[in-house]
Amino acid sequence: MSERQKVKLVVSDFHLGKGRTFRDGTQNILEDFVYDREFAEFLNFHRSGSFADADVEVILNGDILNLLQIDHYGTHTHLFTERHMDLAVEKIIAGHPEFFYALKRFATTPGHSIAYVVGNHDAGMLFPAPRRRLSEACGAEVKFYDVAYEFDGIRVEHGQQYEQFASIDMKRPFLTRGLPEPVLNLPWGSLFVAVLLPKIKQERPHVDKVRPFSSFLRWVIFHDLLWGLKTGLKIAKFVWDTILIKSRYQIRRGLSANLKLLGEISVYPNYDRIAFKLLDEREDIHTLIFGHTHILRYRQYREGKEYFNEGTWNETTNLDLNDYGRQTRLTYAYIEYPRSGLGSDGSGVSTVVRPKVRLKQWHGIWKPESEILV
Image (cartoon, rainbow, N blue to C red; front, side, top):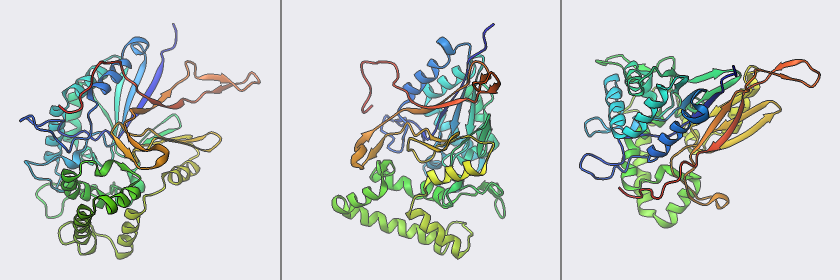
């Protein structure tokens, strides 16, 4: 009897909202994910054919659900309770029926499973209720990991924990003092995404999809100055309210920490350096896979130490001339285990063969048409 094929598929940063359209048929401009059919085809491909009898695990590496931007009865709030997050997951499932039906068919296929690493946009998945809701939608138990999923020398992590403005306080993930029920202890970046960004995106839906952001700022100065000035004032007021005087939101940090936070917001962290530092510190980890940045990436730290970023399935606009224009690349990390766990070092001595990681792009199944505007 031949050994079963074993693979793991890593995707991240889908940012699912309430669906492309509302009940009245109007467009939901806050929806980032429009590739439900393609993802369904992706899952079906990896549960049929040569993968039908294989062990296949899909790892959802954070920010799959955009829980930060799901309104609560029409209001965008920063007070995320367990009931609110459970209702938000319910709305997302209702808005993406094809997506979750495909997950259910995949998860109920023998030998196939789903793991979920919590990111910053879906920090609400730290609550038990939305976890149960998602598992029920998938028709099987989903394995959840609060920060990282480690196996066979590989660490899969969303990556927000290395940024002060996005990191979740895992020692105190919920606020309880003086509150009728626990609420998420959101970092500054999550407050911004939950409270202010939806208002900005209603005017310029593309604002969080442009790379590099410094080039976008220069573009705004020359081509959209009035909107840029008004938005800048809104952001300045939000910074004043949240960091400097803390009149509306609970962010309790010292002056030096707040100055560091402001500096980090203006200069995006170098994730190559972060990855190399972690690989250097952890001798038991040979491969690190991040999401979060939305940038497809491969770097070799040294022989035997590799860093991957699987990118995003969301549309991005690149203002860098080396890769100019709007683009969508349905990318993922493909982890393949050797059919036999033993190899040879050339001298006839058996050695353990580690899984091989590759970055791939899903091209999908040919179709004669696709929707531009529904």
